[in-house]
Image (tube, rainbow, N blue to C red):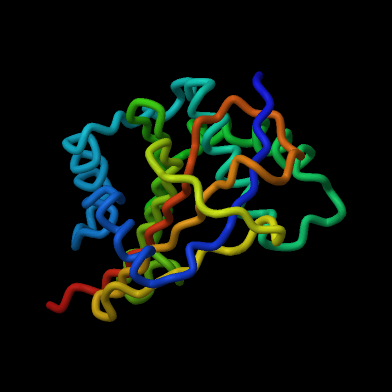
Length: 203
């Protein structure tokens, strides 16, 4: 693996964040409640879904592990270094393809070129209200590294695109000139996270 000094910084302005909504898959922000239809829509956009039980490609594992490391680095690390968190995520991600779908929660790992994504579909509160929540986290190799900062990793600045149904998007840009704690060959330059909460269908 090549050495990549990497730090994540917050995309601070709402204009910058909302503009990245155009980089997110349309399916992740659509009014689609059916999981199978969501996967099909993502595939129509050029993504390849890893079938349950199939092996996740090594490049995708590395990209997703990096995205999850960024997420955990914004919270309490528990005294662990970024490299230790990254190693843990490398061991965790391959198990995603072995997760069994349930009526209340499903997920897929998808790839497109050098990009990778996890898509989570959930019925919160045990489906009590018929609410569907869809969360996509995209590790994108197309982003432009942001300006340097000494603050290290910060949480994605989630911006609300729509109130009803609720749609939010956040971006964490990766700065390849700081924080030399990680050794990775991931080509990720930014992480885009979308959240859609669809209300119950009125009968």
